[in-house]
Length: 312
Image 1 (tube, one colour):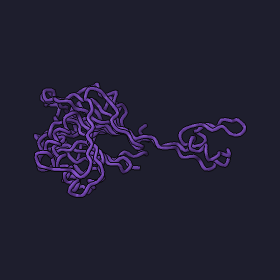
Image 2 (tube, one colour):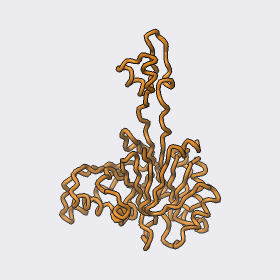
Image 3 (cartoon, rainbow, N blue to C red):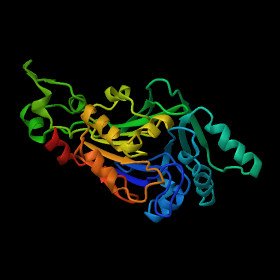
Image 4 (tube, rainbow, N blue to C red):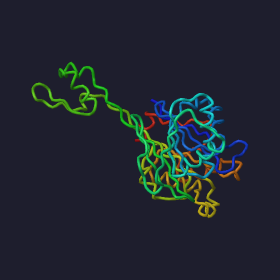
């Protein structure tokens, strides 16, 4: 079962010739979630051969333009390609007004439903849940209201061992309860533990997206032991005062958060356009947190079951 992140945009506010504003695409068991939607995101989706109509939910961290200016174009293209399925967008207050104003002045009338869900940036809250994943907000410290997102895979029903059905003469009506974690009492009153009847469930995976934010240890309890962490690193540590002024982070600070949170892997990105070479970001972060990777556009960062089991 898939749990994989693709970076579509790795730069901060100003795009460069080879780096785009922020956008991530998370695939959880073939459900696609778009996280932020900077300018040019739909081009990146096409470039890396993703079908945009498969995106049903979009999560916007905050309303600085480099995190949502690509949204109006993407929504419009979905319409031009004949979309009929509903689209859900989660963001701080104000995005619906911004998008609907653009549609009003352009005379655009969508033929498919778009639902906006606003959330508070002051406290954490579960904002979406289905059978595969739960999504919660991570309040971040930035110039305007901003939240990151924590995606947690949900457990599926356990598989019952076929031989156990015959061995304990388990009736059909009891199988559903056993798959949901219940023990079984046989006809003689003996209680058979669920662990003896079912196969071990796979380890649940998680991804935390933290951008934009200054160095803030308050987020650590919310992302503790996360499998894959993206934390913005706009600057190198030599510019930590500039990072503090603009409420951004350095590569070293991002690595420190990953280390203190016990994250398994760290991706750093949201690079300032002043940096042509981003390798120094990797070097700096690795002095604190070895398992660091750079956000490279088009690269897929997969969280595999066997990797989690080895690290756990």
